[in-house]
Image (cartoon, rainbow, N blue to C red; front, side):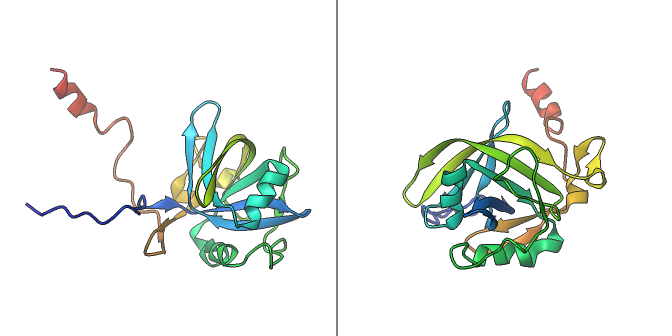
Length: 192
């Protein structure tokens, strides 16, 4: 049997979904690469994300209470990485993408992203370096070509993920099963 080893107290979940955070910063669209995001409530749909307090996007969320989470495809790796490298305090990123607006005036949505969602800030929790923002989904935007049977199709969207601390992007791989299905046989045998 292989020996388990302790690798310390700074671990990361592998992988993390890579997204682009959209905010209105000083009256213009601003974008930041963001992977620390997850859904935290079913109904209403609430998503949580951690944003460093030093980022311009953090200030923009506090100022407007609105933002977008945009899911880029693998074709957008370079521009996604760029918006994470360039600070909104020093760089005007408003012209990088064609944007549109849905229900909220301060949540710029990226047309090139297969899935773009707009949020209204519900709560925030200050951590040591970051703030955990909890936002309620107001609307999600896509195109028919990214749907299968009325649902967003991961194979059509072609999202990518981030792994840390090696800081690499990964395409989403093959389907290996169906949730709430593959374990049914084990569940049945454990109740016999």
